[in-house]
Image 1: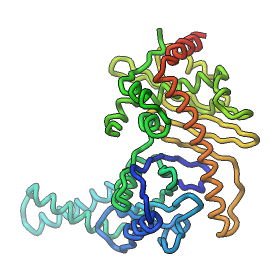
Image 2: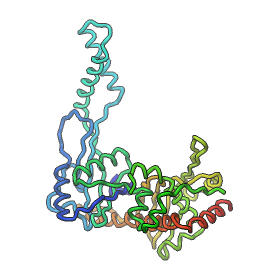
Image 3: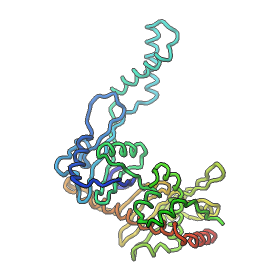
Length: 204
Length: 171
């Protein structure tokens, strides 16, 4: 689900620490360095990287193409390969049978079984095309707030990791406590009162 | 600030209390004092409530347009809190629907006012900026509501509010 979809989900983050100078250049450098690279056939079951908001399959961060008003707008692309467990089971069966016939043994040692599984997985992963998933990112650099357009847990984790690697900045998810401390303008006295707070019982 | 992984679980209840307070404020119309003049906030198409009974958790989900919220009130009477709520925000002729989860403040099922159709490639940037503006309206609302809530929550004003919420639940 993306920024322009009719129905969306959003997770909000706060960027810890301001990028004071040359923010445009720093962001552009990070986006280019960690942009999504088409690798063709690969053994990896997951690949990720930044891509352009308006062209998901051809990242282009030249100039200020990712700047929209007060925002940096770009996307995270995560390509995933998945092989059905039934297909793995089938190939594992035939490969095991082949090895048993070749060796003349009745059973295979655990270690060999493991190697066969690794071999089967690598053969299958080479054949299966990866499914691309796109998640839009809107970064309000004045307010240090980012909207990530998905509530998917693994996509959010991938986003947090890649963001830290690309821009050397830590993201803080906005949840009840962080919203109170970062965005609610509490005084020192109010912050102190927040620390020991405990659950309210709405029943008498 | 406390470590995020610790504070997330330690204070997750604040989000649920906030949503319970929002429901109470909408029902009693006290929300109007926080909203901009002429704007309104209504309970939308879904409320999820949760109640802990010893080691187990009882979950009540009320779904549907114009759904009867009585089951939810009964659940509140038994000691449940609001885990998730769908809200309808109206400002002028425009309407926003969104669902907010108390524990993590994730937003889902966000529907903003219609902005027409993208006809040419040049429209994309214009539409994106318009959409961002419309999403920001929801976040401004949430931030305003939460700021009001948390300032009351950490003050002496919370006790009388709890007393009012208890009366509201009973009626």
